[in-house]
Image (tube, rainbow, N blue to C red; front, side, top):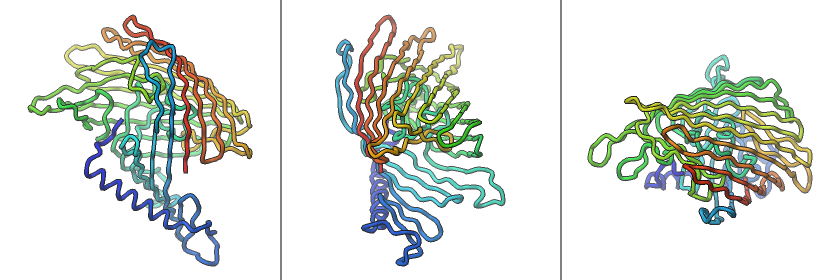
Length: 420
């Protein structure tokens, strides 16, 4: 899914990103320099690529590579086996604790920008901490799985309702207030990347128009390492913008609700609402639950989207949910920070092993639109070799029905992940 076209401006930005990454690498000594080293009291660098200056400002880069394989069976010939890179991301960042942070990440596989933003901590400017303000291109604060980093996901792909209902990244400004037992996040977004089938010009060029207001409230009654209880509710109101085609005629906003069968190397969607014309407003809501107790974890979400239309046309509603359990056989706990899940860090010399089971369901039928229903069972096995390497395997059985036709594929997925 492309957020921006890979044009001349993007080429220049990528060159700048590469140059800055090279600068980060230039900071690296043959071995890391301790902060109190007698050779310098102004700069310390550590592998893989991060340097901290005397005032506490850190500048660094990160890399993420994911190579996936999807194999289908019992699919009536609908799908084609595939294996390729899923992501090839390079990013740079700068931060000073309590003051600011900046990040810029580009995916060379999808030719799309990921997070590109600057965030300022109010405590650095004011006498009191009233939260952090962020400006840039980032995720909408709706949903736990949606906000989790793509390198920290427990399963290879997001659950059915997450892909079907969530909105893509957008440019905007948001505010977040974080405390040990609650988080409040609210934002206004005025430009963003396209969704499949949404807001397209007559000639097929995707629109980035429209506005979204969103907010998320998180309550964390238990917030200790390895002992987490998290509840959250979120909502977003999107106002799509109509477009003008190449002939100068006004084209109504279009929305599509659809999802792959938790196998994103395919373009096939077993459930699909088709083009929904005159999408005046899209209201999304989400409910979240997360429990982590040592090696055990349970996570679930419910997501709902309602498309309001004018001229007496009926409101279209799509909804779905998932629930999964996790058991880390080697005893470690899933990570958690800032209201989202982070990657598990192995403590054993041979790494950490995690076993998971997920059930997900989505319903895209709402008369007169029959987008179909689907539910998937997924058995997952993760091997965290060390903090840089992870191997994931998912066994999926999908069960779908759309307009009287059923396709129920079995899918075996694997992922090799390198993160630096």
